[in-house]
Amino acid sequence: MRISTVVSLACILSFAMLFSGCTSSSAQAGMAIFGGGVQRGEAAINRYGCGSCHTIRGIRSAHGLVGPPLTGLRDRRCIAGVLPNTPDAVVKWIHDPKCVNPKTAMPTPGVTEQEATDIAAYIYSIR
Image 1 (cartoon, rainbow, N blue to C red):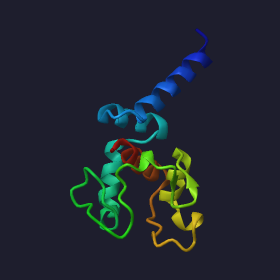
Image 2 (image 1 turned 90 degrees about the horizontal axis):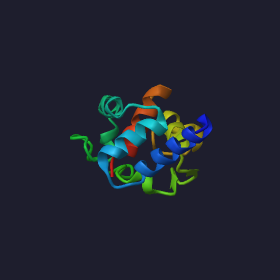
Image 3 (image 1 turned 90 degrees about the vertical axis):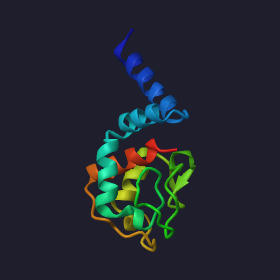
Image 4 (image 1 turned 60 degrees about the horizontal axis):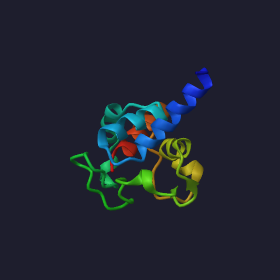
């Protein structure tokens, strides 16, 4: 089997795991697609206080009602009302929301691109 075929099959498998209902597979798929760490994402969510505005399953202090709940984000067609729901778009939105929509109420949290990637991996891992 050629390497390109193996890589293609691995990508398809990752996407299939991401959109399946299995939580542990979803976490692995989030890491594979985003290149982020789910546990690091959880820590960053807590550190940056994302739960003060958002409800996020699995984060004890995340019961905010200002922004939308982030549970189920991976099943949405778009994010921020304007971006297609792709890994790159999610990371871009988390990293610099004002760049996407200058009038958004979401503050620019000051996360690094890696932290945004980790947060996205966590968000995609939850159902």
